[in-house]
Length: 169
Length: 56
Image (cartoon, each protein chain N blue to C red):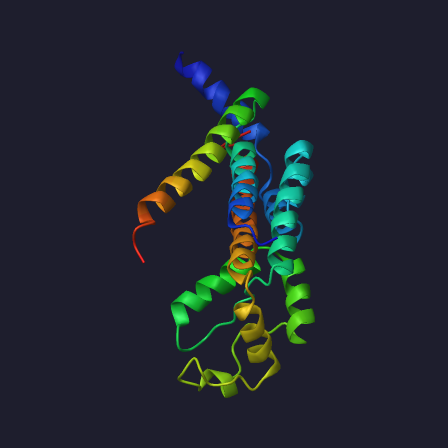
């Protein structure tokens, strides 16, 4: 391929590139609704499949007492990563968390955070709800589904970005 | 649903389908990668469980 052909290919790729604003909007949509970014970029089949898989995983996680983690000062890094995994699912996570805890709480209240032992009884709604869900027999399954839903959706945001910059189809 | 094995199969199905659609565009390739990932996840989990069985 000659240099003229290379330049022509580069110009064609530049023309085909999605504008930065469109990519940003697609990434935001991808977080708001699983598969939303793909739908916006015209990938309808992938959008439907991703929506179904992420939503199914999230619903299973919620139904099976998955752990909607909060930042706990006793385990800061681990609990922050858990919150990121939860938040990856988008607004449906915020709504479900609000229903469970009575508000979109992402930090363990000080009354519970000061407890040193696992045997101490939680005092706040957040602490009590978290404890009861964690002690449920199927909580480990639910947590796996719940965090996986969030992590899959975070991957979808990156995928939408890659499609936007034409790194992949 | 309390069966650990059924959860393993369901979880593997969800994740393998997700990655098949994420990494491949041709339908036949998606099917091949999805099946390969699903079988690998279930098979390796069972193998690991078998290896860990003697440990308390």
